[in-house]
Length: 318
Image (cartoon, rainbow, N blue to C red; front, side, top):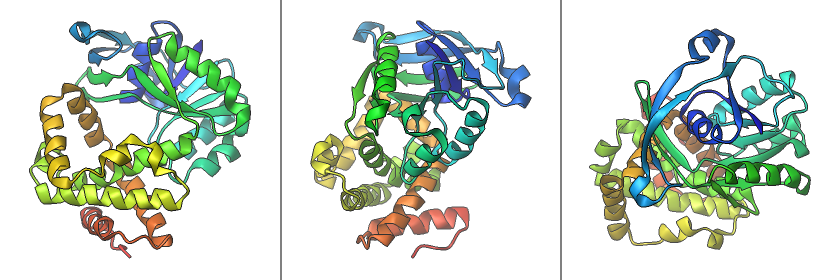
């Protein structure tokens, strides 16, 4: 496939490396960055879960091939941008490539109506990365999962979903096809946004983990968020992470700290979270607003809202 990936951030670079093994991959960048990024070589240090345990630690290099203008000549445009950047990015892209097909790899809370308005129902599918990490200078330090979430919102998206599914499978990444990707994204969003709000205090996962009280409040806030999802029509019984959050906190919190300390893949995932605090905080605020409008009892969310309001200088926590 001829694939255009928006940007050269962590997820864009991660899947650029993976997909370029079997497909032609180009990165879409701003005009002012084209000279700097086109033909730039980066190194990578991956935990590549597509490999057997003994060979998962891989190193190598990847060269960006970049353009500053999209077109309909691409079989797929992958958009792995932060949620608050998505609408503007899609409007820019559709002005240049009005008939292109898109894989939107971003969280959703209130954006789904915009997808249809900007792209049309048949020109996109939803997804979410099965990996993460951070840049250490010129090195991409990341975890590349052997799966990815994909899903179609409408039946007319099924042919595109099938094509995207085969693209990932050709590179050893086996998609999990979700029957309701919007609900999956909502559940995943509320499972990370409260931690993002807590991270806003420290901007460091190790320091956050030492604040046992704040970790407990974050987990309690997640439980409140699941109630918001349920009021939006999500069947919580379908999601294993919701079951996990029902474990008593005196067991769950040490498990979380141990996983961060001992699991190298989790360390790379959480490094990505630290880089995405702005997105998680923005998503947290939108989730809080929805919970308020639905009259969900959420004292722990309100505590975190006061925290992020103090950090960014805003005051509305009602």
